[in-house]
Length: 65
Image (cartoon, rainbow, N blue to C red):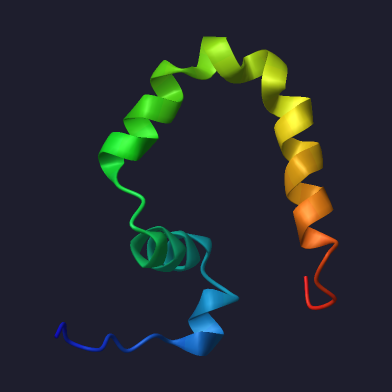
């Protein structure tokens, strides 16, 4: 069992880098994932509007988002 991490709730809302580090760690988003996204930029650039629409469609299914 891994050690429970202590997260500063208030800092999540005031420190963008802290929030990014928290969320990326939570979902297991690595530097390698980041590099792959950068490398595929020219391939997926035309899909950005579709991807954004899909994300918002999903977010709008939940009242808290």
